[in-house]
Amino acid sequence: MSDDFRVRNRGPGALSGGDPQAGRPAEGPPPGDGVDRVVKAALAEDLGTGDITSRLVLGPQSESEGIILAREEGVLAGMPVVSRVFMHVDPKVVLTPMAEEGERFKSGEILAELAGPTAGILGGERVALNLLQRLCGIATRTRRFVDEVQGTDVTLLDTRKTTPGLRALEKYAVRTGGAVNHRMGLYDGVLIKENHIHAAGGITDAMERVRKGLTGDSRFVVVVEAATPAQVREAMEAGADRILLDNMDTERMEEVVEMVRSECGPELEASGGITLENLREVAETGVDFISIGALTHSVRALDISLLLR
Image (cartoon, rainbow, N blue to C red):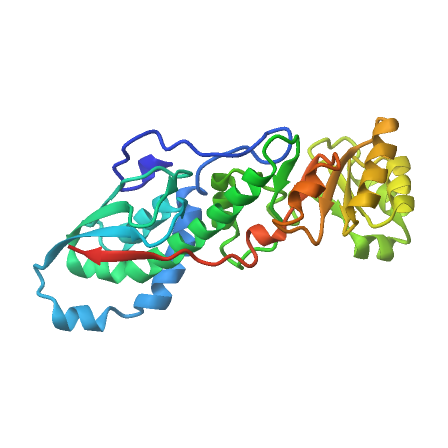
């Protein structure tokens, strides 16, 4: 991926997270065209017909050097996307990252250096920072959650609660923070939720339809949502590959885990009402996965600045 970017990296840029058996493996940002669609839309929104202020203030030959500076600590995610922003504004702007993706940084640390036409640097500044601050915020929050369950066997998953249009980038930030992606969308995973169950007339009927439709197709893990032990039992008997325990308290969750394990039943995933404060308690119930919408849906953007030298 980095070969497509105008980036000079100091190292291999190793990424954290990912488990091919549990979800999506660790990988870099989406292919160049996926990033470009986001970047072009954001630049069109911000630049429009051009940066009037820079055109009036700056001379045509103005060149500058600058830095991207962290104003608080966090985890880096999104520098290849930032590079793509400047490539589209002015290919003469060169971005040199000073930290690797997935690496922790401190307040006051220089995350990247820039050099090139001043108008190009300023023209891409806001879009670059908006994306970087958002992705670093997601990676930083994800790392906190991952750290909280160290020593357990649980795998942390994200959800589809992402910013419209930014899902691929936000899920990349989750991987960079050390967690694993759940399905990317409705097209690549089977999750029979409460409304499906209601519309189909029950878990058993829904599962029968899914299995019939997937005959000969082994690509999909079939996950069934269950809110009660009775629904867990029905999902097991219907042949679910994984059961999502929806908004269960930990006491009931422990009972379900014991029941399912005693019968060598399917994988178990906890979801709903999970915070950093109760995460460890949920992980210690023995579930295999915990999915958390808060990794993406309510993240605060980190404080990161771009300054000319």
